[in-house]
Image (cartoon, rainbow over all chains, first blue to last red; front, top):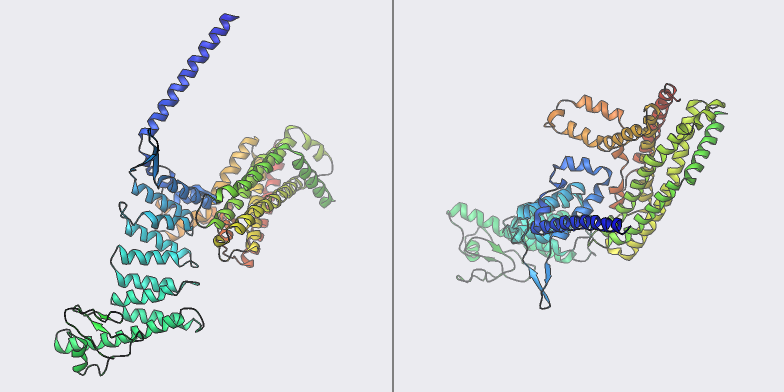
Length: 301
Length: 271
């Protein structure tokens, strides 16, 4: 009896040791593998059509899961110090893999806010530096969330801040402002940026179309009217400056020179009670009277 | 008389299903999944309403599929294995009445399960939407949710009809189950396949096979058309006309399958 018990114990111990060794080796191997390796493999690397086919009627649920997977991979990792407290581990992210997760999630559910918001929070910034890819994600979100102004707002921000394209940013902001319940500041901001980027006429057309649908009692309506008048003033000056350049072969050096040429009888009124200003590059400002700091030009209204 | 026979069989099948322990196990799982909805939703930062609605409806779909593939198949197979079918067919019950009665009984079980699961999911969703009002989809409507739930049930009814058809000619219940699951997978992707081939000039081996795919889309059930989780989750209303057409499609397709199942079942070796 005791011999059988001993034999059983020995076999049990051997089996347990085998199990413990193999499992701890497996855990060790997994801890050595980069944290990001899981993002660079998996079914989400499949082409979008295959992914859709696999998900079947549970596309939305799979998209939810993928955003959780992204969330688990991003963020700060804290490790407990032996002496107490914590230290931050500098993680190495596999950005192309993480981007693929975002794309997979968006393929499955193109309207999911979590995908585009988390993507905007990480991808365009250093070290990921994937502005163009983020814009693609935001473009899809904008198209599929016609009730939400925020994806277009993020797109406009990226165009202005990362891509240095104020005109493009302005146009995007103005498009975002057309969304129901969009805050009035989008119109004002969009108009300003569009004008700075040389898109004055486009900005005026978009603003006029937006004002046509608005009630004068709505918040921000007066601000929009003022911005529209300022842009119309800028456009009048721009057109005169272009005529001047065609006639004289050079840009006017100041607004005084432009009015003195007879091509512009008088400067249009500025609703902000400021002087228009023409800088050395030929850009006209309605909100920066001292733009030509080296050549003072104070055109009076 | 035929209607009475069918009604009797449907009622008996429904009662048998309700008495089956498997049904209650599946319902318990569904209730757990629905309760999990409350926990899962809090893992997200945005679109909590969408996650909640999607999770709730997916629970209904998942549990419904379990009911069709396991409970439905088991109830059908039990009649053959326990030779109860001979007792029924020796009475003035024809094969078509037997299959229709069984099918309708299982449809009633599915309806009951969908109502219970839909209500349970709706309760958890209502809690989430009440707790986080800022994340309620702008056009969310309970009417759309109910319509999506009804579409889900119709989809399950079609899958059930497919299972009955497979059962009618397969030699073993396991083979019938495999065939039904495969048809379900094909049906879920039929619309995708149809669109890939018709809208994409570079569809690989399927390029130029539009007619074949079109023919297949008429043979296999187009189950993805019934999937309205996305619409319900984002509050995108779908028209009453579309809903009616879906109902007609589901009913007509199921009726056709049951008819074919009757024809095939007559040729089946029952002994």
